[in-house]
Image (cartoon, rainbow, N blue to C red; front, side, top):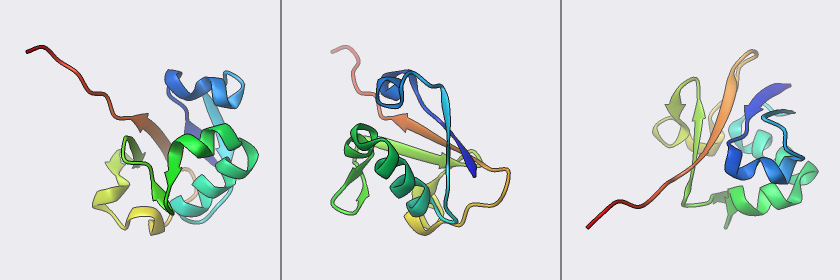
Length: 91
């Protein structure tokens, strides 16, 4: 199992937990496991077979988009971090 850190904005979908465990050998399998167990979270994370545009996924401190995307292998002891993109600023 891999630890998945959940940001405050998504904790409601996982019963308020800060971190949950997921099973899988790749980022895709981890996210699919989460989506199966927490459908409301899955609806926010996944879109059209990929990661939703406003969600960043980090493994080992690196954005998985700069690695092998959803097919990035996950080793024992690694932590997956979910981070919704933030927008805003002043004019």
